[in-house]
Length: 510
Ligand SMILES: Cc1ncc(COP(=O)(O)O)c(C=O)c1O
Image (cartoon, rainbow, N blue to C red):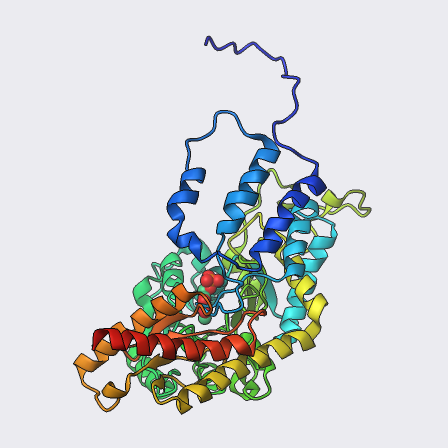
């Protein structure tokens, strides 16, 4: 076709995308969603991948099927083949699906508050939810909060602030000059630290190798004595300490590093203390273990992921940093011609006449996103629905599940507890009676293989869906209870499932 650059006519038709009919379209898929939440038959999804993927995997459509057509595919193919993260027996990784109120709030925010900027309710909820979250766990209100897409980015933000702090002490503005002039930067953490922090160190230009992984004690907590010795060696060798990362709930076993001791240590040494509580910071609400957290105001930066224990929709983390100005220097956006408010000489109108005359609470100077969803509304809705008491009860209940399971494991002749229980994770394995006295390398490998097979069989049976990890080189079944739908029945069932599958599998091999 010949291009006609002089054609200034405007096609008269409306956009192909449906922009209304919300009620009809949603009503069309709601029954499928309600049915999904019964989790009947979803375990077939993996085995039947060929069938549903053939229905979905097609070339880019030239003509669309229209709104109703998409809803039908959603209803009949996509929703029934979703993932059972919300199943009451799901205790894998640190994941769950959201509850009804935040799911609905998220949908509402997509319609009426896409983005939180401007003079609007969702902007206020962003600030309010951060304030409530800080108050819930005992972070001072003066800390700068920020919602992020999850723990990966929240850790990146906290460590970005730590990098800025360490560099500024040497007269370097890391955000502008980079870190080439920062001599041998080093971040200290226990070997149990979550793997996303290595990537964060890489992205920040410190290098993944900047992570110095310290040994842990019997409780899988950082050995502060070793930290002290290593720091002395490193100072003599010219390293720049950038941060100490303390785990407030490791992903493997839920161990909490000695926070009060680390707080004193970092204060005396003048090193930034970053607390990764993506999973476990809420554990401070359990009076049985609150003392392990010490004073959270001693930390320079902290991470707490609402999409874990708060069961916010996936894609919701939070970072808190003591010094708002420093965080701003690390992450601020340059001014942009197309955003009038960002100009250095911008004068706010005295009288605001439109929602767009002001950005409201601005968060894009404190992290790595500019446009972002209204995550605060999700968190606000959770805290508003169940209150502080509802969250406290959930955390207490889930920690009690892990303690209950640990007791059950210790009383069972063929189960072995593999790590101390602190939060809501319980690591254990099946050991057949014939192998109980044997501790050689060959037996360890056999037990690893057996427990891997047990996990697969338990998951395939579908009642309980835990995941696994390694503790001191041993493969262990690792339920993590954060799922609001889980009851004690599923916890009891998990021990039984592991015993039943373990005995059956062992009989198959001997
Ligand atoms: C302690 C800890 N830190 C960080 C992360 C990473 O969080 P996300 O998966 O939300 O990026 C996790 C995830 O499980 C975690 O448990």
